[in-house]
Length: 102
Image (cartoon, rainbow, N blue to C red; front, side, top):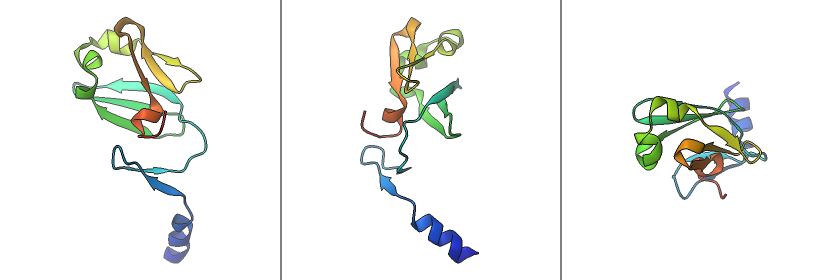
């Protein structure tokens, strides 16, 4: 069983992001956001494939300084490849959070 699992993992196309130093799968479709959740220090973007991207709010001062209500009023942009907060004039693409070319 271990050998079969190791063989299946070896067949996965994986590349390393030079920007974030994290490993990402060679997925062929763009990620689509379905939710954005916040605590005092972190934003979590939930993607439709089940992945969650967690990023510190320090990198996004407008979101860091926003009220809970302002943070909750986001909308998808493009073909749901990004998030936009009208009140804050802030937009973020999921590809950039994954360290992929935009």
